[in-house]
Image (cartoon, rainbow, N blue to C red; front, side, top):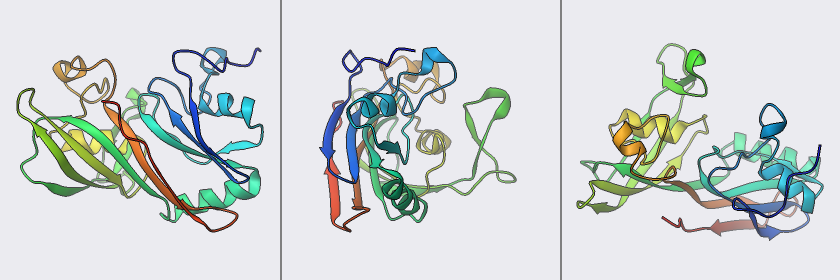
Length: 218
């Protein structure tokens, strides 16, 4: 199988590279890791590994989500960074544009999530079988003309589709979300308006605090 190309409409940009970590800007529409079958082999990890062969995955972003993605260089850094994610020592912030305008300026959503297996990859709220999930949000701006709000999101836990399902659950699905938004709001954007904008963590090998900011382009 030929390696996926380095360039193209969904090319990625390396924002930081050192002996322990790689930070890249992931475009919307590109998988973080390979999917099933050769037609889904092209992904962020494969493209990065062409340039940095020892780069290893430590977390993922949904295919439809853009923004900051962290990879480790070598098994030791991967093990330490994976532990940092599991122990919630990595700070993550996202920016999204949501349908409607929340009544409050900030809040939390604490609803357990589980995969909706007959309709996967969809996730659903399930108080009996779901795993705990917590999202904090705050309004950045309100746009009465098109009936949307720009919000900052902090996923305290890291469940699959957590931000998307939690926002839908409080009546403010993310604009452009083909899985969770009503048809009108799906069609209001050519992409999911969700971007991983901030990432902060301790360097796995040196302990140096690192922080990255990547403003959304929407």
